[in-house]
Amino acid sequence: MKKALRVSAILALGAILIPALTLTGCKKKEKTLYLYNWTYYTPDSVIEKFEKEFGVKVVYDDYASNEDMYAKLKAGGSGYDIVIPSGDYVSIMKSQDMLEKIDLSKIPNSKYIRPETLKKATYDPAMEYSVPYYMGAAGVAVNTEKVPQFEESWNIFGRKDLAGRMTMMDDMREVLGDGLAYLGYSVNTTNPEELDKAYRLINDEWKPNLVKFDAEGFAKSFASGEFWVVQGYAEAVYAEVTPEMKDKVAFYIPKDEGGPMYIDNFCIPKGAKNIEEAHEFINFFLRPEIYAEFLDSFGFPSTIHSEAGALQKVTPYYTAESLENCELKEDLGEHLEQYNEIWQKIRFTE
Image (tube, rainbow, N blue to C red; front, side):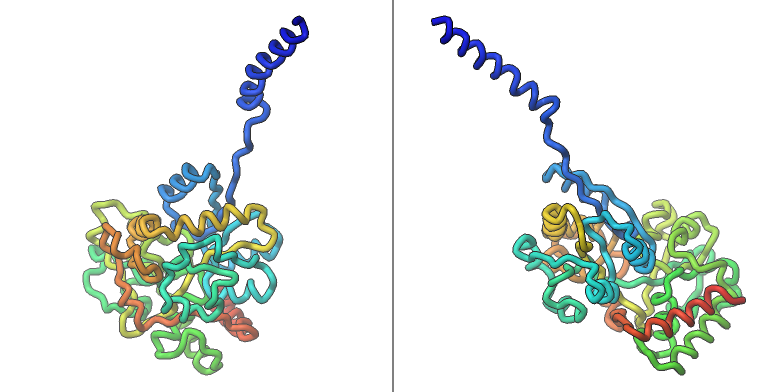
């Protein structure tokens, strides 16, 4: 009888202690997803919804260019579970064994990626190492109060009357691509004569009018009124300007000239520690209602997703049609050095 009482007492004590231990020392460790993405590119609201639904904390670091992202990962500064490179860098990173393979069975919402997008994504059309995130292009933002008359052309940077009030991005492929497109050449040309003409145009006619090349602070400086014309991304500009200023902003991608276009992609870096959570995030992001929220947050048109456009509530800052004459930036392979040499001359010589 005493033994039975003793057993009952032990069981009762266990019923009390086990929940207590669960609430204290045995608390389940929170999972973390490390996301390395462009500045102004993932809405806080989307991250918060993912964190709440999946119990995963998202740590977001940002970068201003593919080159910055690539250099950091190449130097071993990884620890990230998702990165968002453009197509040409997917090609480079894939060839250098810097990416994990994607398991599409864990991303059923990849079915919403438009087939025409995958046809353009020649660097990875079967989504083995990447899943398209967004397709768009940089353009030109103009303060129409300060610059009431202008032609929708890349050559606005050649206007001497706007000298000291303009910036272009500190981004080799974007700037050289604009010059090449304005001259009627492919943004992926490797023809030395065409590249030399683009160099002379940018260095001799555009650069003298620029305050600087800036891929990080251009939107803030435009919003403050310091700069009147900037090359950059619509989402960055409109994120910084006040509601009152929005009506004074014109954003364009030169329709006739075209220019460099990008497809940014979800990728999982080699050695990522939270691969399951990475797949969960990608699949969550591609839900039609979540993707529509992403588009509306940044004023994007629906360019890669088959269903999200119908759910949008905000008029985009530019149209999908404005990309018709744009050209996807491709991996230049061994010819990348040609571009690097030209860019170094533009950036660092008087």
